[in-house]
Image (cartoon, rainbow, N blue to C red; front, side, top):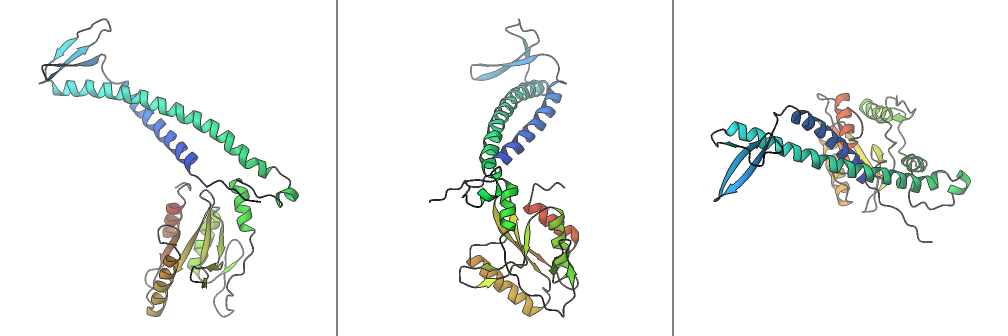
Length: 277
């Protein structure tokens, strides 16, 4: 049976972001419009020249002529007209986005819940076209893997999840990911396009975009051999189509410049923009 799947999309998130931004601008512009003086400007072109007239009465079809020397007055009323037009445009787009999101939310939830609401005994037989973020995360986390063995002779650091990592900085990264609810696997094997298998420090799962990210913490960059190996590892990633700033995250430190928890937080918020500041 051919399996179909819906491509992950940020369309709805972007529509919600856009609607929220429009509503903020609408509120600010509406407040500004309320402070303008009464009347509206009429612009008339005659003999290639623009002339400006102020109409304070709706029954007045001509208005009071405004000399071009009254530039500040002309600017004020032109801005008022512009702001009023903007309010109409903002209002129209907000209404359309609200209609779109109302329909989309109902449809999106329905598609995903067909799988979610199925009993677990039935779900194992299904090839879902789409599923909720929670279901997708659970499925990703349930895939077993065998990480690298950590030697007994190195300091023991255990994360809030109860797993052992190799350094204090990795401990801080793991705990920050855990606190923010970002699913991750520590030293999960990754097979590259050249056939070699490496073990990224952290394999993250971006649930909203349904893609894996790899976080490498390079903790001894003042060691020449270590730094050389780190460069080669970066090249290996890139040959497999995994590039820094996209799906590959780097943090670095030296003995004199340790990795701070504030740096970890800023990196997480850069790649997972939905996390509030």
